[in-house]
Length: 270
Length: 232
Image 1 (tube, chains in turn blue, red):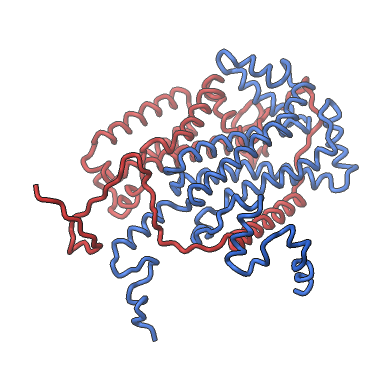
Image 2 (spheres, chains in turn brown, orange):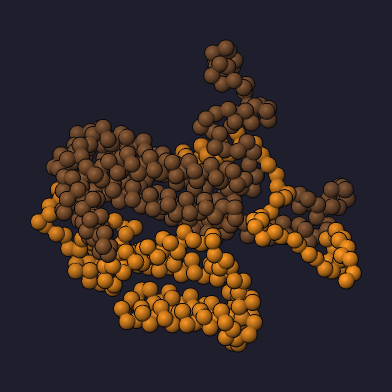
């Protein structure tokens, strides 16, 4: 504790963090309001929305996975060249030459699969809790776009190892694009930079995967979170809230905070 | 007409009639939840940090135990049999087995995405209690016609994995309207709104198609048993 004091109670520290230790409600509020990274939070949250069954933390886990993917992805970029056949050789380098290279690639790969799955679960949670109801309709649409971006991110990353799995997985997918009436073949050409999955396709998928799509997803997540905050925090289960509110209203013996009036008056207390 | 007297009382016996004035454009949300608020700074932040750490630990354990797949270098002249897309697209690839590419690869995914995106703009919350008041009322008849149409299409294209959940969901929706349905089951089923049935049907279809694509398809997209032939 003395060490904490030494670090936090001096001019230099206070010039960085202007409020004091968060021992008062004022300072707790200041911490959130004055910090650029924390200010997407509201100063106060509903206690019930912190419960597991309100959100199952699925949106938060999606964001955490995205952060982990960004970090491990940056690290992987240090060892990766988006060219044929160097890309595949880099995978072998990761496997045999880079310290913890396999672990690093595993983290990125499994987090990517997990993110697709968790984002989908998040959508189901929001649906069954009716959390898309007005005024949150448009935020649901933003969420659908984020789900598509997540799928595209995962899919563009799928090509980068340049192994058989990657090559044929992407071939199957881009052949589906070709089926689109009218624009299909042109769209496929645009996506692959040619008529086959080759060098050009690899560099295009690389740019999409490492720059364009992450930027798009970041912007989308910012909008998504900002709207959640502006609409009064996460919605939890609208169903259950309405049910509880109706029960409170219908039962005259219950006070505003759900306690019985008799308890408020101290009756029945020992 | 007698003037309207508004009495504020929550006792249903003393004041039996209620009115609620809701403006059409006003969102129906609760303004007063009677909730307790806590500061985000320790409460929410602590939770976020704990979940973050749990995610890192879990992911690290999985990454230590299981290696990411890496096959031989890409070879355009050597097509693996079957050539599978990543798992989240295998539902679509499974559809490709039944429908022409325009339908399976373009039309159906487009419809699914649009269908999901417009969810909040539709009033699909037909509370099912009104749905059954007289047998074969309009919504029920409409649902029957729709299900019959979709099922016929599915039979023509032999899409059994989609036909099964379609029929199951239809039966569950219609069951409370039938006389022999036990009262308890009827009450429970009819409390589920239409939008939930549609979403659950969609989730069931996606899950079944993806599972089949991942585990039950082998060379030439033929049916295999994963415990006998392995996973391709």
